[in-house]
Image 1 (spheres, rainbow, N blue to C red):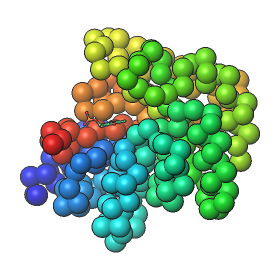
Image 2 (image 1 turned 30 degrees about the horizontal axis):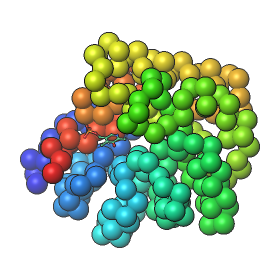
Image 3 (image 1 turned 135 degrees about the horizontal axis):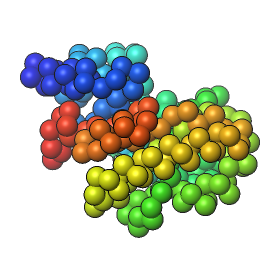
Image 4 (image 1 turned 30 degrees about the vertical axis):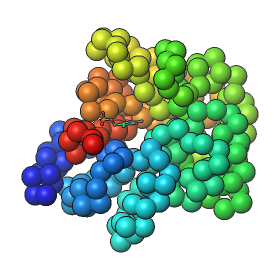
Length: 219
Ligand SMILES: *Cc1c(COP(=O)(O)O)cnc(C)c1O
């Protein structure tokens, strides 16, 4: 585990300090998550509600960790998601946002939200198209119990690096445009995984989501 702690600490040190490193811990053991914590990581990203539930309970002693949901959320799990996560980064439809707002009110919570947006069409991924996002903005901005903070982007997997960079740059421009033209304060850009976080940083990511580069290949 000391190797793992060193590797993760070195990675963290290589990233600008103002950028939040969300360690993506799907399928990762509790022991490895404790190593990440020992290396200074304070943000964990999970893509399944049930897995996060088990891990939060096992790591309840780590009280200063922020938990991020980064995977598609089914509406029947929305209530648990509000209970478990500080950030829900994968809000991919107006309907889901409205449901989360209702549930947040019931639970007296104010989750931080990223809107997942697809800058290129990708049948394998959920997310607002740019057009859908513009259309939904007035209604999104009117949801009082959600703190809508930014955009989350997952580019299609088969792009060349210059194309991936372009997607990230377009995300940055879109967030800026939305800030000017709506009442949403979108100052967060969650983008970049193990293979493309450098490009994301170049384009202005404020949060990156590395998994394998920290913990090794997933089973
Ligand atoms: C799995 C996952 C990651 C991490 O991917 P790696 O390639 O392991 O870095 C980041 N973001 C999301 C949304 C993911 O599902």
